[in-house]
Image (cartoon, rainbow, N blue to C red; front, side, top):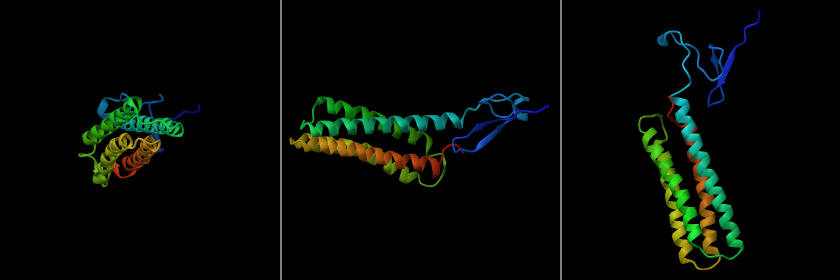
Length: 170
């Protein structure tokens, strides 16, 4: 008879053998009495990091698109724009809290760089919103739109640092 072997794909793209025969579970370890243990621990950390990264990217790019449309329509910074930036800031604060919780005990280099990118991403939309609210021309909201694109680029770099320089799963 032919034996079927299942493999679970790790976050780095490598196949991890799964001796239990059930998808989504790690191979049985002797320390657990021969029972298969579900993937936990690092998968949940990586899941939080991925979810948060995608949420920030979506909010930053959606805000940038919205603000560029309002720039083309010659709108000034209004209350709705402030709410949009506040939502983006809330997600960025969650990113900072996650970094503070996970990075200090993690192996790898690049921790200071990661924090510098996260803090810069937090400050850019606030500074642009302040500048955009002072500039009463159509380009005031354009400044905020560009800041949202900058946040998206900064978060891409933060994600790269999470993946390749700071080992929060090790």
